[in-house]
Amino acid sequence: MPSYSEKSAFRLSTCHPDLQKVFQRVIRVFDHSVLCGHRGKDEQNRFFRQGKSKVRWPNGKHNSVPSMAVDAAPWPIDWHDRERFSLFAGFVIGIAREMYDDGEIDHLIRWGGDWDCDTEVTDNGFDDLPHFELINP
Image: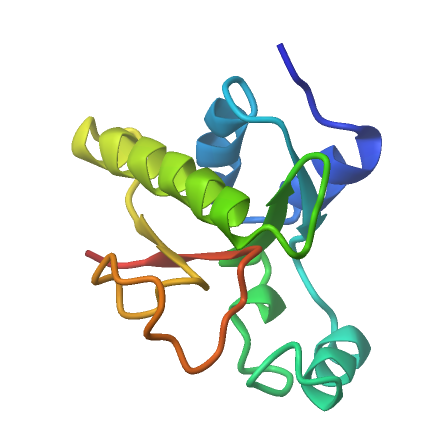
């Protein structure tokens, strides 16, 4: 069974408990790396300048403590494999939905490959495939 590296475990520890619970369950069935949890001011503004984020500090879901967002990618990472990112996102969203329905977590999850949560993954103006954030149902 896959498990987190020290770096991924630390990054996940900066996230909201609901994200931690979901991704601890996901790692059991789909190996992945946690790229980012909480993001500080300098890092957030750098990502904004680079076009990797649409918001400046402190308006990002990564900017709160604990972070309301996590960036995670299927391992090994292939940034050009959108299909694999979509497959991974389906696991994350499905597991989160089941945990929400069972009362284990208080939030649902939105993925940066389907911002409007309509299951249509080609209608985004901005793709952020590793991004998952908590939303209120």
